[in-house]
Amino acid sequence: EADIYQTPRYLVIGTGKKITLECSQTMGHDKMYWYQQDPGMELHLIHYSYGVNSTEKGDLSSESTVSRIRTEHFPLTLESARPSHTSQYLCASSPRGSSTDTQYFGPGTRLTVL
Amino acid sequence: EDQVTQSPEALRLQEGESSSLNCSYTVSGLRGLFWYRQDPGKGPEFLFTLYSAGEEKEKERLKATLTKKESFLHITAPKPEDSATYLCAVQGSSNYQLIWGAGTKLIIKP
Image 1 (cartoon, chains in turn brown, blue):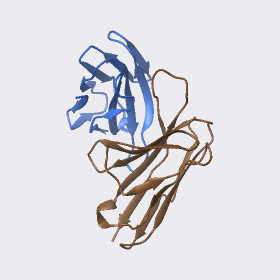
Image 2: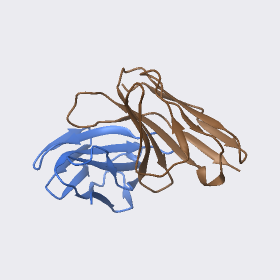
Image 3: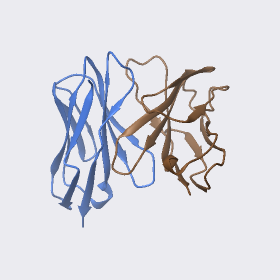
Image 4: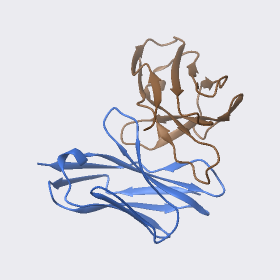
């Protein structure tokens, strides 16, 4: 059973606000990911981390930043939210040492920027 | 360029009517092909990983198969609770990131 948590589940904020989306996992996984998903569209990778103090940008250009100070925690921050940031944000994790990257997902955060 | 295409975009079936979902892919050096189920407003739930052509995996009413160019998710005698969007993703040897399809929305009518 995957134990990966995201808060908040839903967030409605005004333009220009700074927000942090939280993601935590209790499985001891080294790898963690943030995806953006719009209705009916593919998941797009925006950030990933292979361990503590390791973060990389994904294929999708993003104005967000991430940090990985603890193995279990991978927060995503938007310094100044804009309506174009309205989307579903999904956090995932996977264990190290596997030849393939089976990822386990949290429930997601639905962000609406007015 | 690695690519995943899922078809159809949406599929409506009567309860008990078996069918298949398709995932076509191009990737350099397949490491794995993944199937996920996603319910509305939730994160994807892992179903299967397939590693090589000819491999098959089953879980309840679902069976996933793999060839060198595509994967099928066969659903046998589906029930309304099988309604969801089914996502396919591939991982190649040159890029460890998963490449995702847009999904097939499956609706099972009672």
